[in-house]
Length: 369
Ligand SMILES: [Zn+2]
Image (cartoon, rainbow, N blue to C red; front, side, top):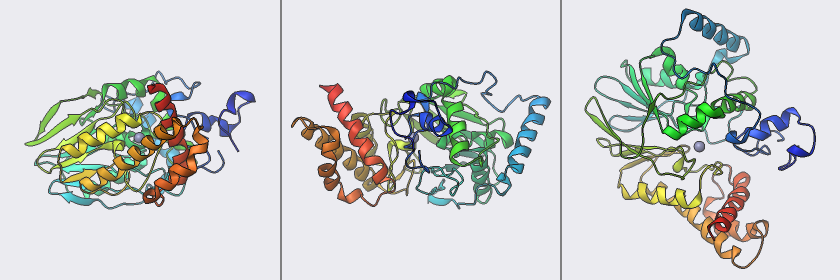
């Protein structure tokens, strides 16, 4: 069992290795407490990390084929099982992933990849956590259209959303891959390597062979893209979920792809963001008045799902602030705050995450004083 703050006190074990950099609590995986991917201090970025699949040499392709072969030998030959895409609007399809943490059981696949079919091609949002997940996403696209993928948006730096870029680049090397400049910076600075490592560990090797294909086209607040007559508008909410976030609005379908700024029926770690920034991003998202909201995890819906998650963050933060002023410690607040969050007890990962959320809100309240 790996406990928080235990790492420095003794020689690192393999469990500590994953504890140190994984974005979730170790206790949620087998036996281990996790820190942020960005925190892992001892894995510097690989100098050979490819930024894009395009322009790969024959040698590079050969090497990629060998790596794929190893992955096949390692047991990934079955690929990620199919999750059929659901059409949520005229041009928009969402593959709603399972709600847990990355695991052997879910093959590391647990986000919501989405795609928009344009008159000439396909725009993908967050193609999953691995090359295997990305290939599954391509199969679902193929079930809908034969058009080529022309663009890929990555909503933020957390690898469960974007390591599937590798699969898109294999088939459509000319596709533009877009992300926030800070996402690109962090990915190059080590987050990519850390997420590759984490996914491989969490799935016991299933995602082996995945390469980090980092976006090469930065997009930020206020950018607009007209793609085959469809209009995409970028919103970058600052320090909301991760500090690397973009939300993408598709005007014609009245859809907002919110990334992990919006979660529904499933919680995750919030340690790379802030409560106040997250609440502000959700207020902004609701104010856009879209018909459809696609969360980073969990079912899509109308504006009511934005209110649901915003209320969670607001109640937790306001209660932490109120109790902080009474002078009690964060762990002493838990029972009272949890009782006020009864509407969320059935959301996946509630028990694993709520204590850490309170701890983080406490730190944020303290820093804000
Ligand atoms: Zn995330």
